[in-house]
Image 1 (cartoon, rainbow, N blue to C red):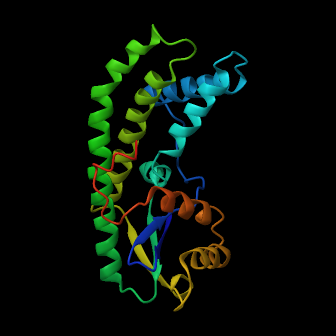
Image 2 (tube, one colour; image 1 turned 180 degrees about the horizontal axis):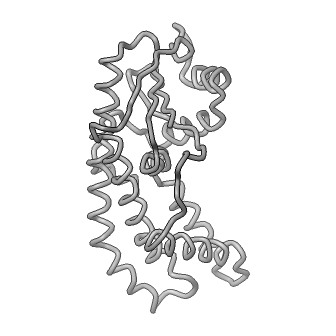
Length: 223
């Protein structure tokens, strides 16, 4: 699995991984498979609903999705990674890249652990909304779904942090930011030269949520 370390002008850094199939990935089973099937059925019901509250339900659903962590999908994919390649700017040494990668995983572990516990505590309460609210209980299901996402993220992080996980570091001049270049221009250039089709959208999503390199788990703007 390839991970790219990209520096921003204000001393922030982001880790990005292009969505791609992971070799050796197995189909979902058990609870995760059940949640995936339920998620797809609920999503279809929400987007095809022609009831009076249909548009409002879709609005809430889309708003909830916009509040998820931009790097969550990458962390979940770490569960199936056989090896990790961290590509970093040539201006950063291997030891520094390793330190930043370890620091990133540790901060994400704290964040997802906090939200997992919070969602587990809130989920039983949201299930009570099934009775008074018409339509699909998207709030109740959402918190249950988020529990699974946080748990899978934690499993991916745990796998990446294991000492026996093959992790290599590769300096690249393509990731170095020229002086005077804006963050947006830098993202666009890196995306073009490295073939990262989703990097610009990822950066925009992270910028909208104002993700910090050491963001605390108490940033209540996130779910």
